[in-house]
Length: 391
Image (cartoon, rainbow, N blue to C red; front, side):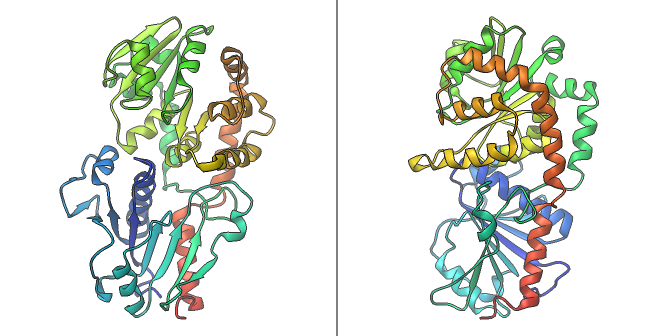
């Protein structure tokens, strides 16, 4: 299947639905495959403006460009024809985004045919283990697509985690001066840096007002760092003005400071520098797990509250014996009523040392199963050995 098993070529198709999560995952995968495995990667993206928010090197007006040694193409839509010679060894369809028909026709005409992978969303639900790596034959063409599920155990595809990440993380977190210098770039004072620091990244429906009121009345000061554009209405109500990068306000025990929307590398540093991280979707959720810090996950909203089932599946394996974390995260996502937010926060605050210990143990547990990029390439090699796609 692979023309050159040591250095295959690969295309990733990404349709941006959740502004930064989809492209965030695809960009991490593309870079890791290129830089750690020598894969020649082409990343097709339909929304280059969102891409540029997490990678300032991207030119949103360019049809084709090279970014960090990855070929980036502006995916304009489903029309157009493609030649079999343009098709790489591996084609990744991210979150079932539906490849252009002409591209699929060219895939079928290629000799040998490429490995076709549907990269699925991350969930802790049990059914994933039975669906991971399952084939699906094209109804008309001689092509087989395989489903690849990220996951938290050895029966899934693992999680994206680049080499050397934890070494950098530990060096950062064990060097207070480095963390203070990073935060100072955003106007954080030495006094603020010495206290409790929280990052806030959530969807618009998060109960941020309730959380802010609980922090205002807390026993100790909290510095809340919010990227520009996140929870805009609630932040503007708190600071009584436009929520622009660099603005801040203090009420009671809470200081809210608005940050610029930072590139991926700086976002990792932000997670490392904080004592508690509120994250959303999939990409920032995974990065919070690698940060080794307590986190609260805001899951992407789905019809018929299917996201609550997904949330409970994760809490079942992560929040064992952490009742305050379980209750707070369910309440943050509207899966159950919180009632008294001050009491809920105080319970979570009391539990934070145990949650921090769990975060470190969890990170080691999950990384022991291997990283997703390596497992993905290993799977493709297995397909080639078994001639799976030559039907």
